[in-house]
Image (cartoon, rainbow, N blue to C red; front, top):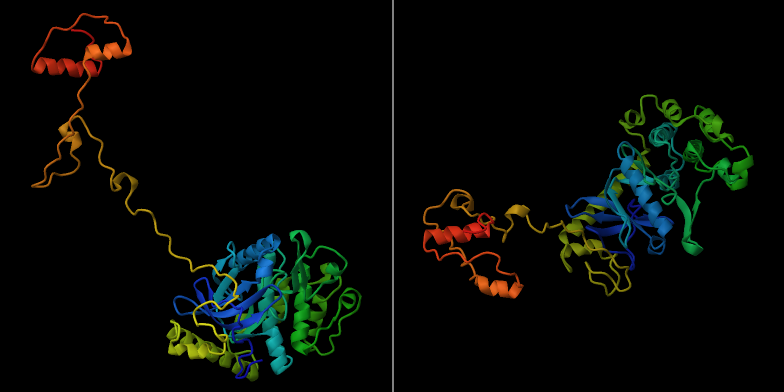
Length: 429
């Protein structure tokens, strides 16, 4: 933990990227088995949290598919206690997602700093998570993202930051043949026996989180106890103990649905209950201190947009020796360039593109497009190439002379005859 209450921020390391798409990295916000989170500054000056997938895992096709799926889940669940994603890159060499920065501590950091949460804070935490699970279960999907490191405690309520097994993974590594191996922080009784997890599995993990928030310890330590032992809920407040015990039932059908859990914890809703404050003073001070640190980093990043600017002093601890601020250090992973706005080939419609003129007409009226301007002269038509005489054409094609020669005509009559022959109206005169 860094001093000054900045529990979730660390200086950038030598191999950390300095530029992630359009976002400039300012500090580390933490890491998981599958990704590293950075505090970054967007092109508009706003602060965001950017999660970057680990390069070793990003090369695995199974990981890329799972990363894309969880990014789409975050977009569908945006709103409420889920922060809306700002931007994501799920098809390039560097996989990342960005969301707006909210000053907050993870549940694990909060327990380490202030100990178990008061009963009212546990109610608000559980109600907010249950409301999110209710939205997830309404779509028929299962959320594997509940863990002490993926649940944030902000000043106005809890936040959920992981929407699948990758975000909540304790261990993730690439296996042989392009396989992906992921181990979660928490298991459920049905998973320990090899059964397929369902919505009730999320309720079991929610019960584990509520017990952890209320006591500071996990009621079921290992997979064997999860499958067979009864949870130790002696430290859970008496009013919450029956609900937590029902969430931790061994049989999935005995666990309550997410909507019922949310109603029992906070009938008026988590947001209404947290409106007047819900965190202990120690955590409130830590969140405010983190917000101040993020603002100072943002100000330093804005002032030091160019290399060597005075604002780089705010990031002096983050720049390795011998590296130039604003440039990649030696050995840093390759990054995708900032996306540029697509420039169309032409803003002129095809029929009015430069170099495409009106079709030439045989009449003067049809050849003139639009009103005639004063002083404007229509360009002369190109001279028609000289035609080969008829005897030479017949000799070249071998066609016999099947009609007598026409008498010589002069003036207007000759012009009419030639034009009629050209259009097939006069065969013989």
